[in-house]
Amino acid sequence: MPETGLTFAQKVLARASGVTRPDPGRIVEAIPDFSYSHDFAVYAIDAFERMGATRVVRPDRVAVCLDHIVPADNRRDANNHARIRAFASTQGLRDFFEGGTGIAHQVMFERGLVTPGSLVIASDSHTPSGGALGALALGVGETELGFAWATGHLWIKVPDTVRILLEGAFAPGVHAKDMMLHLVARLGVLGAVYEVLEYAGPAAGSLSPSERFTLCNMSAELGAKTGVFPFDPTTAGFLRGRALFDYEPVHSDPDARYSRELTVDLSALQPMVALPGREDRGVPVGEAAGRTVHQVFIGSCTNARADDLAIAARILRGRRVHDGVRLIVVPASRAVMTEAARAGDLETLLEAGATFMPSGCAVCAGVHQGVLGDGELCLSTSNRNAPGRMGNKRAEIALCSPATAAASAIAGVITDARELAVA
Amino acid sequence: MKFRGTAAVFGDYVSGDTILPARYAFLDPEAMAGHVLEELDGTANERVRRSEILVAGTAFGYGTGRESSARALRAAGVKVVIGGPFARMFYRNAINNGLLVLDCPALVGDGVEDGREIEIDTVSGEVRCAGRAYKVPPVPDAIGRIVAAGDLVEYGRRWLRDRSRENADA
Ligand code: SF4
Image (cartoon, rainbow over all chains, first blue to last red; front, side, top):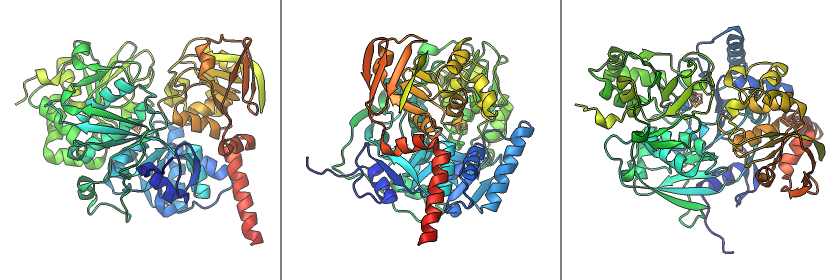
């Protein structure tokens, strides 16, 4: 067989492992360029210490950001946080972000810690978010993060890559989240298992870093190893004055071999709602319309950036949240909240009746705060809706964009935002 | 490696959050074992604790990357998870906790019943259950080494020890 070019993922892994031509399926030992964790770092620390390790390899390339259980919910969690703080300081980790700074994925993104062409690992399944900036960002377990801190390397299976060609432009009222709910429904929760989703095509360049983040983030919901947006002028612009490490963008060769190619016509999409139970149960909002909602959550790493809050604010301006609905808004980071405050969106949301919680995973993680009652439905801008995800398996979760969430919060039932006249 | 025992059988799309909800993620192993899979139905927890071999349907452990689901299964005494196809992070986390994960979707497709006797030989790649034979792909070296060591912590401990010895010799 003639040698073809290499994909982005192969190239990053080739550099990080020293294997010149890592073929898909092969397992390589790679050296990550940057790693991070959150509250679950305690398990990485545990593993690190049980291995008998004393010094973190390249502590200047490690960060921790508390986000899952902030502020601490009980003595155990508070002690876990204290242990992480102590570890970060003794080991001289590059950064420790206190609870309230934001969701780790968002914080690494906005602070310039995730850079193009780098191999990033973090102990969380939504690490693929970093693909928005052209990194190969892989979720790993806590024990293996501890292993990487102790030894400097990690085993990684070289993935196949699926090319997703984006065409056309979103119709008004249709957003990046709708595109992902469509794609997950089309391919299923294991639709791209072990594969990398490379977003390309004529429309890719028109998406903002925040929209790219949503797409890469929810690549995890297809079982993908990660998602990536090739580096382009948008990436460069976003990182100017922000990137904290020197970087070298990496692109797939023109003759790289992809396992598949899929096309998504953005202009043909409608607002989507993933019905309760599984992320691939997405239907056009019309098919879910009219269902009573008890809680609306605008938050999580998927959709709680400044543009998301602005969309929600535009719909909620001058309106009131329905009496039967609790609207909980959790900006993805303090920086996002500050930006939304400057833009006046915070005020709009508060006036409409939103309740704010500190920046973090909040309701999404299902550990504390915002837990649902039996038989309730939460309409959420997050990425997961398996039974029990928000802390009560007798409650249900449906997923949607911030626009659908805001419109439904006003109506008290699942509603197509395009039906509300927005000035 | 060889395994023999009765199978605890679970269906498709059991998410990692269902295996062990996040609110139990910081319990000690014994307490975790008491909660593993209890969200699923009334007998699931008891069944999984009775068997070393768990037969899992499509996407078992999908969703969350929290390692607690694998940790909880280990605490419950599970040694092998067979079936699939599996979600990537569940696969990694299980291996790193010393649980062998074997791809054998045909086993699930044939509708193996709970409590059936099952035999697995990872060297020959043969699996026997209910009078039928199945094949599982060979375990890659990098993964076999971790499981053989016990888990990734033990593997890491040896790796560090060997490395410091090499350095001392050099
Ligand atoms: S917001 Fe939700 S999906 Fe994102 S990192 Fe936190 S718990 Fe995970």
